[in-house]
Image 1 (cartoon, protein in one colour):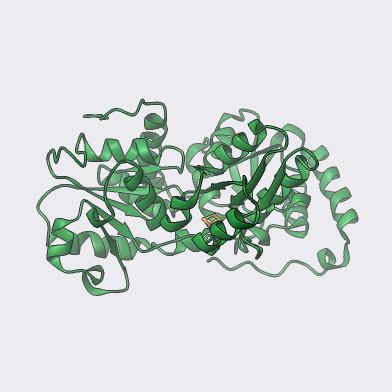
Image 2: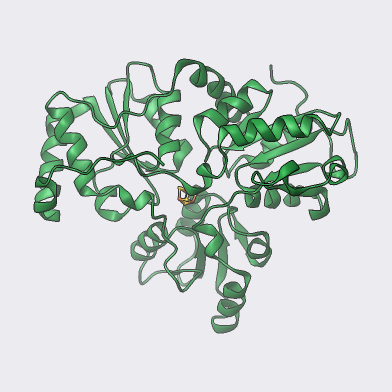
Length: 382
Ligand code: SF4
């Protein structure tokens, strides 16, 4: 996590309505030079100023599509701002309002750990290992994957990317026995591979704090998937027990969860998908339907309020599952970065160095290319 210096005291003396008025004025002053992006998990008072809302990938693509924008203020977390910097023109300045808005999952896979793991695995296995990283990872990890014939994936196209990485290998047809290293989220890796028909015993979990990942050479050789021991601190709060309790207390309630949830939760769910999928599913749901949703609380509450009286939408957990790092982006920090931009100063710019950017772009471009592909084995992407 990066260090965010304290804001000047004036920002602590302004209340929410004063901050909102000042942000609105700054937006007006900057006009088309500014685009504010708001991730779905942001708090409502920040989302109110977003020109676009979406998941991390959609927002980065939208940022790249803004031809007039000089400044992209990304109300999300650090890895998202890095992706926006990689995907936008070099002239575009990407700003993260609070540098301490990191992602606990991305922080679980440091590039040094990945390089160390890669060399240890290379000493043990002979077949090709394809590194696949979820977009919720640092630019350095993305660059590693891009530079080692791997790719990024999102929660919506992880299935297509895994099929591509396996190059035709299926549970019933061993193919050329290639392996996949999936990071940093073991749950997305496990849930996706299992949905493709791979049994749980075809997967091992690599603990970067242990020698040889805490595994034996035999376990690594026998596995098809090496899953990095990482997780989302928000989605791990959902449990299978909560799903059972809701089914017992409220028959007919559909359970809809994000694939960052534990495998046992996913097994209890009626539907599993990305934040965009969750939103579309609830938008299309019939009036009178009941839903328990396993994802970040701000998004679930926003959807519950939007459809109040028409559809019954609630959080799967009875405790508030909040992304605390995303929550660091507030009106004060947004106001502070916009005040500075209006005065001709850039604060909190997120800039990825050229070589990391080049290699990470390879991994991201593969992800974008694969997103549009049908679910069939792909033999060559270069
Ligand atoms: S919800 Fe989880 S994966 Fe998403 S930014 Fe927060 S900690 Fe990271």
